[in-house]
Length: 237
Ligand code: ADP
Ligand code: MG
Image 1 (cartoon, rainbow, N blue to C red):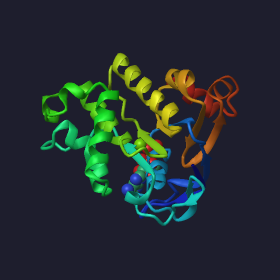
Image 2 (cartoon, helix red, strand yellow; image 1 turned 90 degrees about the vertical axis):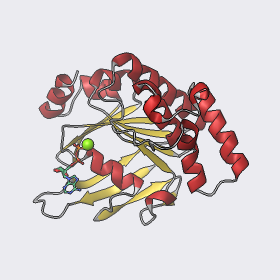
Image 3 (cartoon, rainbow, N blue to C red; image 1 turned 90 degrees about the horizontal axis):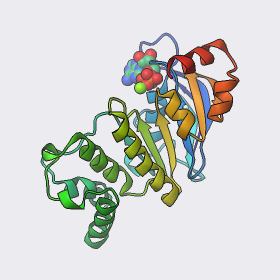
Image 4 (cartoon, rainbow, N blue to C red; image 1 turned 180 degrees about the vertical axis):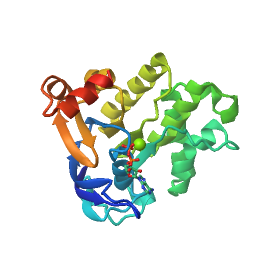
C-alpha cells in the first residue's frame, strides 16, 4: 500500500489537514500511525479507504491505483472505535454481510463465515444477537467481519482504545495471526507508545498534517528527530 503526496484541506479550514504526506507499508507489515489529536491520522485512514477524497495525491494498493475507486471497491476494511455491528443481525449474519454485499456464492459465504467464527472463538455464539454479547465478544465479531473478505489492507482507527489491557492484547494477537496468515498490511492508529514499541514494524508520527518522524519504533523512540517527537512519544508512554 502506498499513499503518495496526499494533500487535503477541508472546507473552512485555514490550513491543510494533510500536506504532501507520503506513506507506504508492504504486505504483512504493521505500521503504527501516531500523533496528537487533530494531526491528520483519521483523515489519512479515510483517504486510504476512499471515504475522503484527497485534493492531491494517489493511493496505490497491490500495484493498482485506487484513488478514483469507491470505498466498496477497494481491498481495504476499516475498524473504528465504534464496532458498528448491525443490532438486528445475528453474529453469523454480521460476519457474512460483507461477502453477501460483494455477491459471493451462498456456499462461499457459509464456508468463509464458519472459518472466521471458528478462528475468532465465536462458533458457540453464532446465532446470538450483538446485544447479548460481552464487550470483548463484540470486538471479536467486528474483527471477524473486517477480515472475512480478506482485505489487502486493514485500517484500525483506534478500535482498541478504551479496552482493558488484557482484552486489547488478545485482540492484537488475533490481528497479528491474521496478518501473518493472510499477508495483510495493517495500519494501526494508536496513542499507545509502549504498545507501538512492542508490536509495530514501523511507526510514522504526524504533526499538524505533516510527517514529523518515521522509522523502526526503537530508532524513532531513542533518536527522535525533534523535541516535538521526543515529548509526544514520551508523554504517551
Ligand atoms: P486525528 O485523527 O489525528 O485526530 P483528524 O484527521 O481527525 O485528526 O483531523 C485533522 C484535522 O482535520 C483537524 O483539524 C480536524 O478538525 C479536521 N477535520 C477532520 N475531518 C473533518 C471534516 N470532515 N470536516 C472538516 N474538518 C475536518
Ligand atoms: Mg482520529
